[in-house]
Length: 283
Image (tube, rainbow, N blue to C red; front, side, top):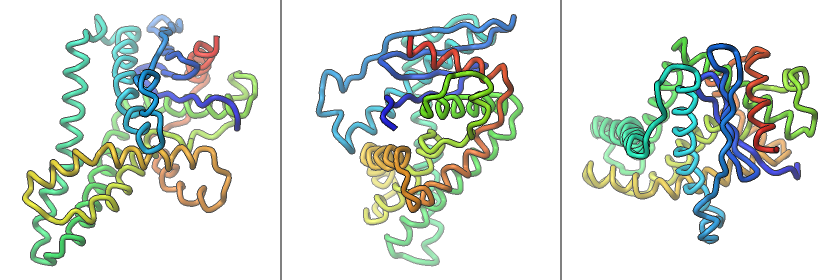
């Protein structure tokens, strides 16, 4: 596939797409109309080309995607009639800090703190770090499973499915029509869900050799090494998204299976929204 890569995410009653130097968020309003917000998007890596290097670009893209995602969620909430106004810059910063802090508590502090109860079984730092990694995976799966049962989230997951199907149709270079999009699968190898799973797995191998210092040092070391983990994970999922190798396809299957929880089959109206979003970044 030689076409420029595009990516996106599901938002409230809509889909955000990024590509061609733009970010577009299409949302189905309460009256049934589709509103589209299109903005130019630049990356800090355009000013500092070193940030485009492999194993560095992953953390940059991840952080920028977090900012764009929260902005798109704010716009979609307003357009769908669930919020009166979009987030201010201060509120956006506060939301990002809160999201990062919550992620650190759930996926770093809790698993590494809970692993201390395994001291009665082993004192070997290597095995304690492995146990911490598997606890992190369990928490991650439990979190995904829990939110997948929420009714409002299930609707977002339908838009997530519409996003994937539309990207597949774009990558196949077929006209973006509802009928064409419907025939593509909803599981995509470059999905953010698959990326997060790879992050969890890569972190097990990266953290396994760090020893077992005091709790605060363990938490700090994992936070400091997050850009390394994100960089490795991004290169893996980028390669997997383009590869046709059967071994690579087999290796990414767990990430695809997990998308059975985070995506749902969309209806035609949701696909229409996703198509609007992709068309907007290509215009």
